[in-house]
Image (cartoon, rainbow, N blue to C red; front, side, top):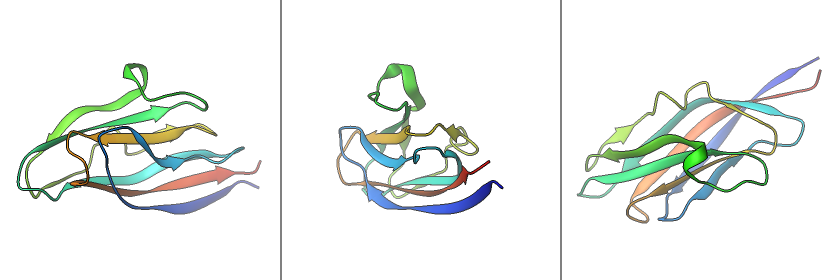
Length: 114
């Protein structure tokens, strides 16, 4: 029997290089239930999100949210992430134009079993 397990993605501050926010476990398919990005600075900041295949790297071929600018002190929930399926071993990665001022957090549902 297949199991649907909710998993929280803890708040993480983005850097200027793509870093992993979530990795789908082996033999598991995951679906994003929610994800938000908050700009804690006093200036607009752009961020980019990638759905990177197993053993791959973040690049133009796997961008899910192209450079989106969040106004100072605002949050954004990218609609293109909600319901996104993440294959086993794949990662969700993100970067920001300014380090340590955009926070990301969310949750996924992991599906495993037969």
